[in-house]
Length: 221
Image 1 (tube, rainbow, N blue to C red):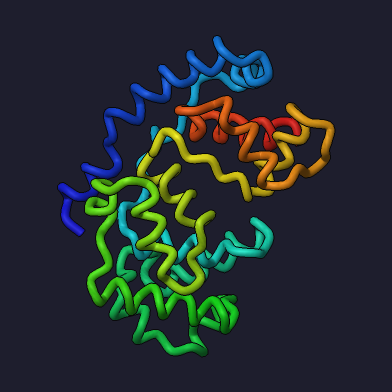
Image 2 (image 1 turned 60 degrees about the vertical axis):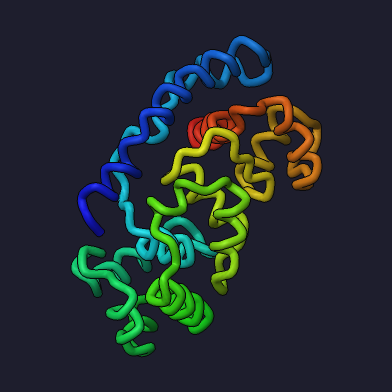
């Protein structure tokens, strides 16, 4: 990973400018989300430097699947510790790591299989984050969901938190469904199709709307 690639992904001028414009537009146009924006304040998505390595990002996404946040954080720390905190995590090193070592870090056999498939595809020439950043959202989703264990939700998280795409709407996300149920419907946990419909009101700024809904659920659990 060269320095230019890191800068090109982490420093996204459109993201910062668009998020300010998006926050203003959402607050002015929708009374349902305006109070949430007022409570939370400016959107800080994209203002912290993140890893720009695709293997690192998708490995973490796999680790976090279907377990509690606390368990995922523990497993992630143990996994990255095998590679000097992630600094030396590469596809060849991951493929050379014995299953027993990965199991000792807290990874299930299924997730080890997912990680090995991810490393194999990266070693075979999967596009880098910089290359993916040149593509449309659905193209990125199509490429990355070909990896075993990487579904649409995982790629949407990458689009939101690493590529800072402005109009991503993860309608299958449990917290988003809960937030829509709390603020917009009488259902405790509306179905993803219902959430999809409500998300249309926030186009083309659904990423920012999702960020505020996530934050609202953290602040007001």
